[in-house]
Amino acid sequence: VHGGLSPEVRHVDEIRMIQRAQEVPHEGAVGDLMWSDPEEIPGWATNPRGAGWLFGVQPTEQFCHINDFELIARAHQMAQEGYKFAFSKPGQAPEEGLLVTVWSAPNYCYRCGNLASVLLVDENCGRSFKTFKEVPESAESVPPR
Image (cartoon, rainbow, N blue to C red):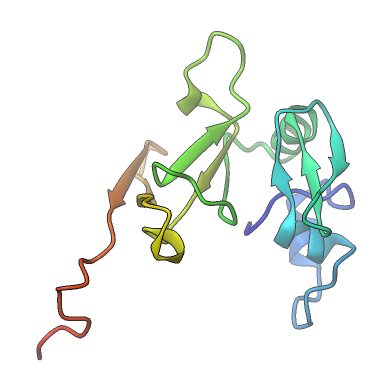
């Protein structure tokens, strides 16, 4: 998903049923999936962005359990190291979290100094990340032919 979860969507099959050829509304499942953000809270809260929700560990655990997911991958929030895990259980490593934000825009807005990443998943569902920096301004923007 781009943003996150929606209180209107419990099963992944419901996402497949959504009419997506539309302007993204501020309310409802489409807007929630686009704009919602994870937060270290138990449930749901109003998102200060003005669209979507803040969702916590309980909705994430429920969605993963119902859909037999080990991980939810999303984008939508800058992560300084290129990716950031959320919702690992006490005593678990952060990489065992139920959700990961994968950010693919290095040095966001030409001023954040962040890395970007790509999530790699192998045939055994092993996960790793390829991180990268922005291309220096001195480099050619179009590769030679």
